[in-house]
Image (cartoon, rainbow, N blue to C red; front, side, top):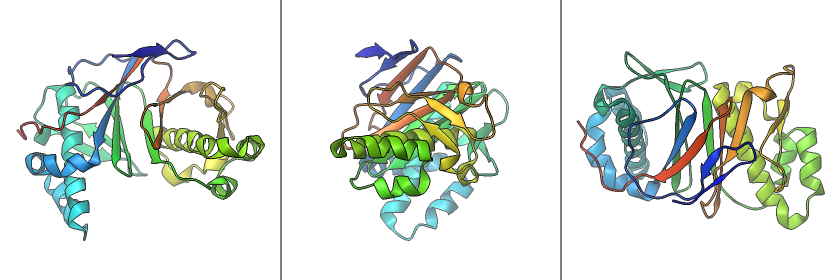
Length: 260
């Protein structure tokens, strides 16, 4: 399992090996799990039994059967991953939702587990940590996004993006976009925090960083940003409250676990 260190010293695993989770997670670690959504159909039937009545009802609202299947598979996957850390039955987990829809576990013996889910195209990512807020974002990359940056990014970010060679702009756009979305998700504020009210680094040679947050001089120092590499055709980023010692990435095995 190849690993390297980020500039801040965080041990960062850069590949996505398929492996079983250990169920052990320290407060200064984050683990990010990847699910290839084409596998959702394979696991949906086995995982559906773990879903709550509310989750099944939400899945049934999708008109497209393929979207229903993906929803069931991803929600069941979420429950199985979290249950593995807690040594609990996936069906026993209970969730609450913040004002902007960010989910959290409720009940006893939850180990102060924090998590965040993102999906785009054929990839879903689930970040899991303890005792610190976090957010993850994955985006399938497309070209020609400068106009979107001019609409949503801060003036500082747009100036940097425009100054880059044209063949670097698309990659830099998604580097910026995923870092910003992950930060918004970590704070749990959704669209109530406009993307132009804070700025992140986006040049290839610059360390991932939150530069400033409008109206809060100390907020930028509260968070760390980590890029998630090696997903061809995608960009992904993780934002974590404070500093962490290690960040590990893994691909969820395609065989379904028991729904109990």
